[in-house]
Length: 117
Image 1 (cartoon, rainbow, N blue to C red):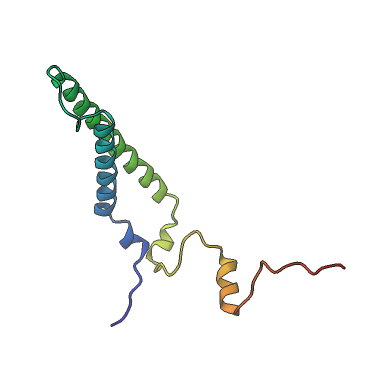
Image 2: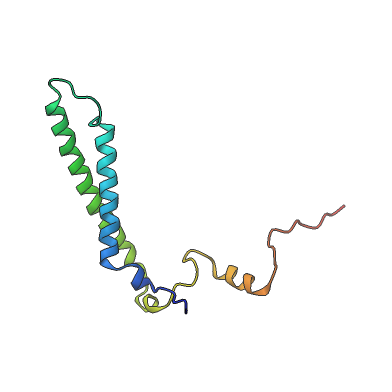
């Protein structure tokens, strides 16, 4: 079985971006509901407070969904389109110098300096 490295285009399809934004929105909405005490025992006149909590959770979830989509879309603009077709073989934030050092063998850059005694 051959291992095929995914391209950045494969990793950042619109369905994946929407799914991630939806997960972030649901998480923010649930955290808002829990922090406003929706799961606690209801008192006699607390129906209005629960409706307000659901409304606020909906607003927070909507804002989170939109903000997540905008931030990820703007982040994708920073990627060079020519690099979109190249397979991802290692982390994007790693230095190219580290790759060259890994190819040379066991080179440790954190060696202790020679003592001048």
